[in-house]
Image 1: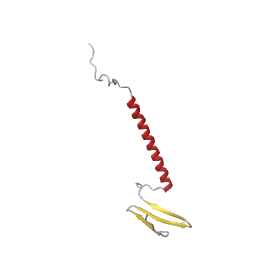
Image 2: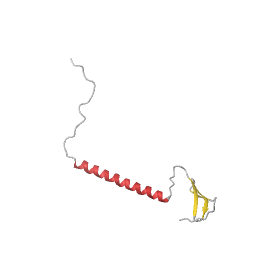
Image 3: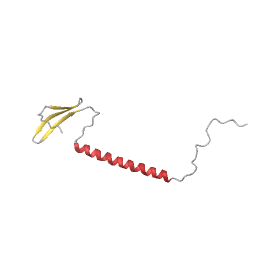
Image 4: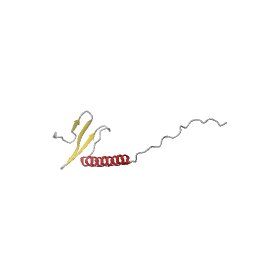
Length: 95
């Protein structure tokens, strides 16, 4: 972990596109501004952890659904499967 000391109005650059600026310091609370392109997700840590937890739960649910579908398809009774039926095309006029 990199540890830096910054005063109000000073910034830190992360790569070429992200700037973190100290906006205000009051007691033990520091307000920071983050300038980043819209393509870069910026979240408070507690929000990030909650999003990650929900994504993992959704992935497990999707995996469970896929497993149920796979099992159901394997248990399906073997036998002839219905075909597409007669080809639809122009009819010949009856004489």
